[in-house]
Amino acid sequence: MATVRFTNELIADIKRKARAPFDTKKGEIEKSKNFDHWAHTIWKAIVREHETALLSLPAYWLSSSNRFSVRVATPGTSKYMYIHAHTQRSYPMPRDVKSNEDIECITPSGYIQLVPTSEVFKPLIEEVIEWMGQMEVVEKQRDTMLDGVDQLTKTYTTLGPALKAWPALWELLPDYAKTKHKDVVKREKVEPKELKADLTAMTSTMTVIRMLGKL
Figure 1 (cartoon, one colour):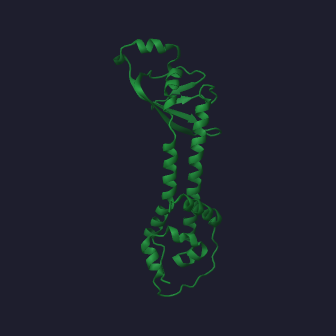
Figure 2 (figure 1 turned 135 degrees about the horizontal axis):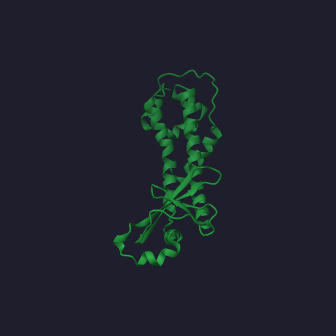
Figure 3 (figure 1 turned 30 degrees about the vertical axis):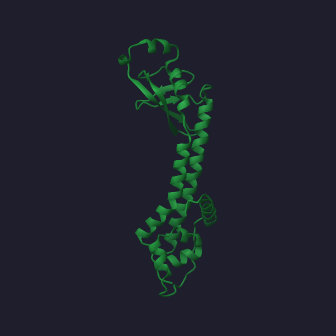
């Protein structure tokens, strides 16, 4: 078999093909969720008893918005999850709010921060957490695959031994590497090396990708 070395170009092409199915799947999950039906509830939680008064004012007296940007605290961490809820009409918006049992604040960047213990927004928060959890699963699978590719290309300098260690790598190769590998030039001597990649997890992930028809 021909000696095919892991050049920076080849590694980048392998990684690009490896991560593409995960990016596609994550994008599908992102687009699968729509929070627009929460928009009016969010607005009412902000304006509360002032709703009637605000709606009675001339439209040009206040800034208005037909999109509410919301951030939800991730349980047990200091991180936030971000969503948007759109409306068919514009609503007058205050610059800030007095914190209450549902809304903590409106951040300087315009995000409406929900109170994690809000009963009104409990279903929304649960929706967001479940939705983000689906994307995190995909991200972890992607990271496992990319870390494994890193380990393979660091452990072996050429393609032949890497394919012997993990035959499924063949499916991630660009055509030019496959063609060169098939050219019979000489047989490489394979030296045993310690490979730290989780090949079982990588193979399981590849199986899922094949089932989804992503490769």
